[in-house]
Length: 345
Image 1 (cartoon, one colour):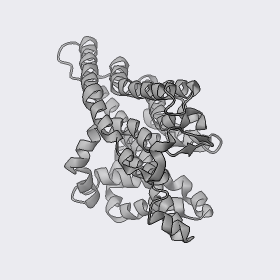
Image 2: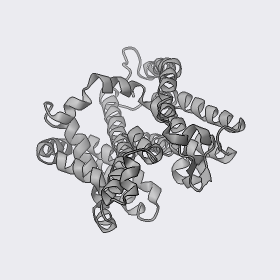
Image 3: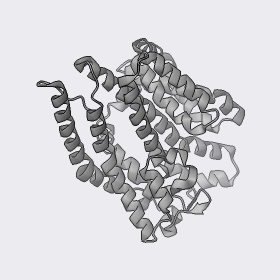
């Protein structure tokens, strides 16, 4: 969804029939374009939600099995899972910038490397701007497991307080809004009854919720403002209603598709490298560089990131993740004694 959204938002302009629709001044053309382009944002929201749910579920399972959570093992797995492939991409962008092929400053590289692009606006440049979502993830990984392991309050109460605080805080600091989706996933993981409720209502409401989420970006601004606060709830109904609802439904069948599962293996590298192929000529008021690559709707270049992403997965992600799990296993065995079993994240 993220890649499709980027493709339409930044690479589909100037291509018939999209330009024909816009050229005729048809409202339908521009609104359809807005809807398709918004798929990227919707995909990121779903990703945040499932991430909060998955991490919390694994923490709960680890504590149930061992009576404790090994933060050291958790952070080792996260570091080996995320950082090597990420810093290879950042290095590639930096070298392309030094060679004059793209426009990227040292500040952008530093902000991205420190995982703060979610609070940096256009300062991270086009080439590293997408790492804002990775920054959200890393900040969540840094804070929530420690709260889970050490907080004296009941975790459900903490999760509700945090979720409420994020809703209020996002009214004054927009970047906090991304954490709402993660915390919704956390809440669903902690409340079994909520999962059962979502599974029960899914058959009746899931398609309506999905339709509202998809068309909302093209709606009048007053509608967007009224329904905007409900977006995390609608997204939760779609995401978790699909996961916990009737297994024979259409959406669960799509999620079980073998090709989608294979794409899931390389999804992280696809996320990193797609930014090189799906760039606009200008972004954030400045040129991105390498204009010739983006002239005439060059769709061949728009998919060039795919083999690079596959190579990143095979040569970097896969072996280093295995190394991280091996180290994590040794840590948990040392902490828990013989017979400990690693919980993978």
